[in-house]
Amino acid sequence: IRAPDAPLVTEKYLGCGKCDAITRTAHVNGATANKAVLHAEAKKLMKAINPLICDLRGIGIQLTHLNEIPNVSIDEQPINRNTLTQFFSVKSKAQQHIGKKKLKNEEDIALELALKKSLKESRRNRR
Image (cartoon, rainbow, N blue to C red; front, side, top):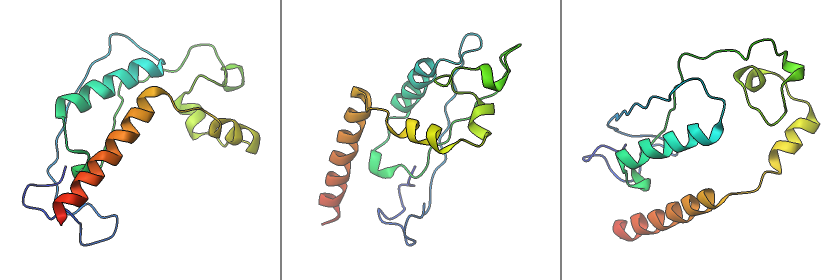
């Protein structure tokens, strides 16, 4: 997050400038491959930090204690089930095209609107 004494606009285009590192931790009960669970935990962490969107300079998510799905080869895993093995595997053009067709859900639209509003407010404050 942008440091309080850092300028709103960074010196370098798309740079971070001076930042304060803020961390939060969440624990999930048991192993999960459910993206809804991970998304909900990430949202809770962002709500706990409650940053101004225009002050965000980077977001990182770290997962630990990862386990492979037992007795299932990569080819047998469902396409809609994302795993780290699939993430690092080379995808065919057809698989890449399928991923681009996903529709935005209500939370994505709400986040997009909040970001636009925050950017407008930060532009007004600069004047």
